Amino acid sequence: MNVENTFTFDFFQYTIVSHVFTFGYAAMAAGLVYFVLTSKNSLPRYQLSSTLSAVVMLSAFLELLVISQKWDSAFSWDGEAFSPTGTLFSNGYRYMNWTIDVPVLLLQMLIVLGVTGAAFRRGWIVFTVAGLGMIYTGYAGQFYEVERSAPFWIWGSISTVFFLVILVLVYRTVYGNVGRLPAEVRPLVKAVWWLLLVSWMLYPGAYLMPAIWDSADGVVARQITYTIADVTSKVVYGILLAVIARKVSKHEGHDEAVASDVTMPRGGITDVAAPGRAA
Ligand code: RET
Image (cartoon, rainbow, N blue to C red; front, side, top):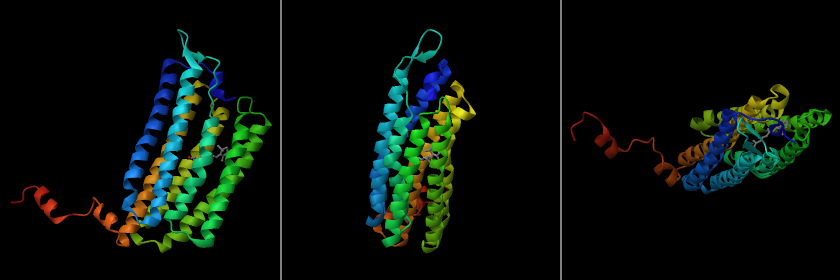
């Protein structure tokens, strides 16, 4: 049972959540187009990362569409407010979506940062095991969020231990590999760490929201938090990795990466476009 089902919502609260969900799945659909169409701009060894971003986009698109439909059917206007219909809204779908997305997002990082061999296999195993441990213990805990009894706190704490393991390994992966990459992408690689840290921290924040702000407004804040977390940890993160992959590919002379660089001045075009110059 999630706290969403324990409140009635005024027109603004209900509608804002509805709109936020729509933004969420629209962003995933948009991301899907971007990742499919730009994957060839990088060397073949990085293209799997774009494919994996597309997998993340499709799974999140479907999950957010379902959750949005649940929201619509879980509440109806009774003349004064949107009140529960008896059909339950559930954040549990999110956890099932993370089962796919968390291991895949971390795998993408290993690919783009050029981790290979035994380090790649070890990283992939630790990320997957710790990721699933984090998700399923959190999933167990969220069933107790209404009463916030012991299991809510115990499962939440165990989940946090797995989360810390992941963060340590992400930090080591980023800072252990940044030096091998071309100088121009190093700030972007460090940005991967900061983006992941900040965007992933929003999820435990959303888990704790019922304990911090147990009201209809708290529900609105929680769904906005989840949506910001989803768009930053999946779409923005995927774009950042795609840009790093393209820049490294360009550095290594990959034709498509050179040709698709929109920031490179091209003689003829610059001449025509330059204002105040005789043709
Ligand atoms: C839970 C339970 C409470 C404690 C912690 C949690 C962490 C969740 C995280 C989820 C990340 C999800 C991502 C999904 C992208 O698709 C499970 C809420 C620490 C970090 C990145």
